[in-house]
Length: 357
Image (cartoon, rainbow, N blue to C red; front, side):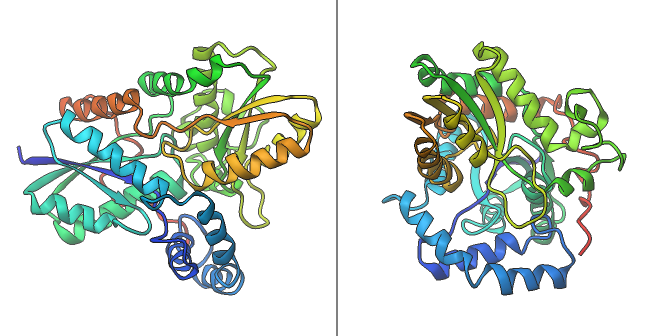
């Protein structure tokens, strides 16, 4: 048995709110073939002609609304989470970001310098998607092979329906749920519909029937939409939310291709127009508050809701460093030692299939 180490990986953020830093971050993020899954030349043309000349300035203004003295909220929160986990386990813990800094490669280097030969990776994404969970696993595999091909890698599977994760979500949401509401909206990060079809192992199941996510099927192992529905159902049951008092939507779409529906911004407006006065929004796809929760939901979502006739709008904070969430991570680490952990997807120890291009 070699020495083990734990690697936590989150999405990442720009180094600052300067337009240049935001542009560098977006170039790395949107240049990922698992995010913009088009052929390379098309991806580069879209990125350099239509996105990078315009989006960095808008994104920089959005980041300025949420930036703190510690810098990016996502980075600061992730660092605190790693610091809270470290004393609870007898293994070194390091943090890496899929895009930006600290990079995955630098985090792996830190573990290797401590003599680690077995890496346990926890992608900080509850649900499988090729543009989030999968790209983290693929990048860690690539960098670990380059740095230490003799080292071994074990990966925490998506935990969207893990009972302790659901309990942690409930514990973090309970104070605001108990404060009263007219409606609870579950807002998940959106992805293009084609991403579901690309990762459908059958090639003919996802989005082919209106209730495909509600019927058990092997495709759900890599179906982001089905996993979002599963998280919602379990949390609704745990919290005892009445029928008609909750709904599900998807936020943060980009481009003109069809993305998962219903859209969060349209849903928020509709709820306000339908007479909902007190709206709570929870974002279970994000374990750390970030631009998409603090600006897109708390600022833009609140504005849309109030303009549509709503009165009280609140986003339930993400898990961040909640003690119950730290408990869940401890359980994952301990479970990986005992060997009960299942593989997150076929071939997790081998190369993940990359999108064409």
